Length: 264
Image 1 (tube, rainbow, N blue to C red):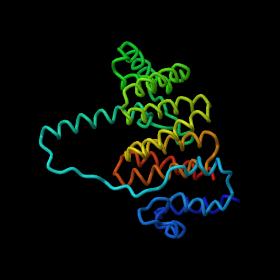
Image 2 (tube, rainbow, N blue to C red):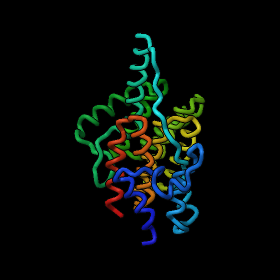
Image 3 (cartoon, rainbow, N blue to C red):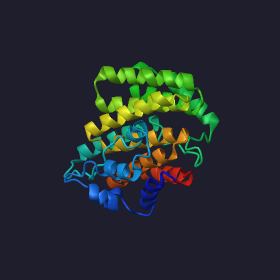
Image 4 (cartoon, helix red, strand yellow):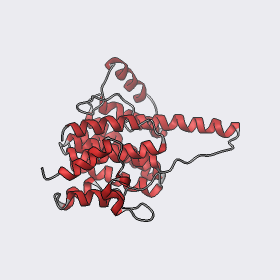
């Protein structure tokens, strides 16, 4: 197969070899770690991909992610951190990363349709203009319920509001929301473009959680399109980042990577 060396690189990763310590990766390693992942996979590809496929599959430079610790918090700051964590969990739900997924399709499973319908009714009754997190959750619930036109509209409204706010992290989350809705509608170009933009902005913000989320979403889109090598590369990146920062989403990335590798 013409992708053999890429597949070998990915399979090494499944057995604990990171891109950084892979023989190709070591050769490509620069002082600050920038370009390791790109150089390793580019060398493995040896011209097998078109320029577009290469750019789409490995668009994000691999960097070394470090866990940041904060010490000496007061009780008040700890309470604030807990509230922020709760909001972050809600945002992850809105980004579609907290629903159980089908191991074959990697799409969310609706375990209790009645509960989902009730939640949709509850969210629809709220003032969505005043609560962007609620609108984001509503867009996700609509998508999972199969109401894709409505989901896309609510996602676009969420992104428009985020753009107006100037909050860059909020914009990244909204981009992922829009991209996921487009993906489920089969609008691959729009979805992949949105995920790419979100990942670049997350890298600029140096937000590990958002970079991993964007890589995971991008992988899902490639997986839906039958581009399993590209999907595996994206899931591999999401897995390595989540493992480095101790994110619980590592399990989801690991399962997605296994699903993509099984298709190779």
